[in-house]
Image 1 (cartoon, rainbow, N blue to C red):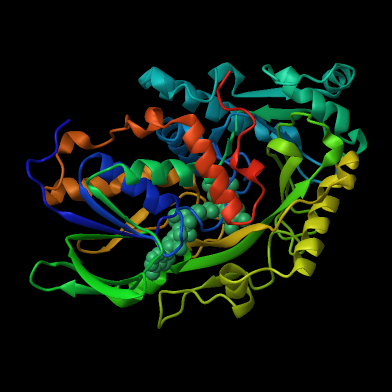
Image 2 (image 1 turned 120 degrees about the horizontal axis):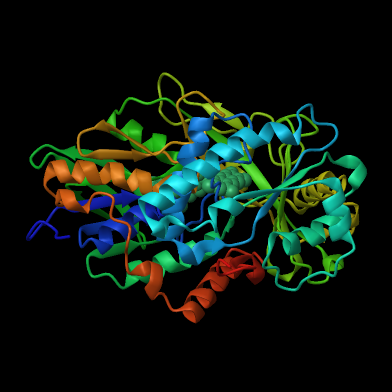
Length: 484
Ligand SMILES: Cc1cc2nc3c(=O)[nH]c(=O)nc-3n(C[C@H](O)[C@H](O)[C@H](O)COP(=O)(O)OP(=O)(O)OC[C@H]3O[C@@H](n4cnc5c(N)ncnc54)[C@H](O)[C@@H]3O)c2cc1C
């Protein structure tokens, strides 16, 4: 695959979250002249993410079409970012209080299995979620009772071995059977930050400007490109670019306002909580998702394991992950949805210890309903939190990539990080039309960064990013680093 000879097009990317970093990695490795602007000291410092969503099984309310797209996008993501993935499965549980039944999940799981098989038939390299016949498995009450008597396994390899700690710790009276195990993996944002930085720093064609804030964008009438003004090390600069990628996350609307681009979007503030469970004594848990209606006291609970006895917790209730007035839309006069000042303070300054303690304890209590032994867990660190953008006016939308409201301008609007490769593909199509790259680049997936990163250096870098942000170093690591 060849680049168009002597291409001098200059690409600016505003925002070094999962979207901007992935665009920089992709286009930088193609040899394009890329400048990435990120206001923070390191990459991927925006809202957290810990689930791959390979099939969207955490969201019963979304359409089959969105689930099928998330599956395809997750396969691409796994191939592009193997070093980011924690290859542990997810167990889906329906509490007895839920009005639906586990059997209601099966038609979608069958559909997703068929889709997964079709992706593998197209390209065997797509087999990144294990064998398709193991994409999901169901466990009856008798099977779970049998597993309850088995010894725990230090490094589980089979589905049964992964299910043992669930069988031993779950309250049988609070859950419906069967339980469902699915190949939904975990993701580690600190490892993506570290791997992206290490790769981008080594690329001659990329300028990585961290600690740099973009404050103005104006059209350059002569070149039809963009003049971008930014402050780096207290000095203001203006440079010209041919193409602008707006990957500013929940602040995307601010750039749209500068450009006068048409828009419709929402922003939602949410938080996940970090707990530490001494009592788990090194038990290797899968992720466990307890379904429940969003926004009610029975909202979905998510129990996400990290190394070192840390568990990230979500509870889709207003007392835990969601917030009163946490979801806002843009107005007729601005593309930028306005979050309340208390949310901005949390993002830009800090949380009070009192609120961290209150919400983390509420999260521990929420999950202890189903895992009683977990009630001894304590606050592990400050929460993982942030505001995410959702394009349009449907707050349940989970699949979105990018739009092109102006010439030579891409507005990234991912809702799930697994959408980044489709986002990059759509921008690549624009670059083909503009003559920046050859058409045969479209859909390219094999890039050196996915295999060339030195594991020790990557781990050290990821751990120091976590420590700089005042999180435990264990949050920068994975439980399972290879697919079995
Ligand atoms: C609690 C919570 C849990 C979540 N869990 C998951 C999950 O499990 N899986 C999943 O896929 N998704 C999850 N999400 C959603 C996910 O976090 C977001 O979709 C994703 O992080 C968006 O990435 P982004 O790159 O578009 O934006 P961001 O990560 O917000 O990146 C934007 C970047 O732009 C920078 N920036 C903004 N303005 C400027 C400027 N003017 N100059 C320079 N830099 C600028 C910011 O500093 C920021 O680093 C979760 C979200 C939340 C809130």
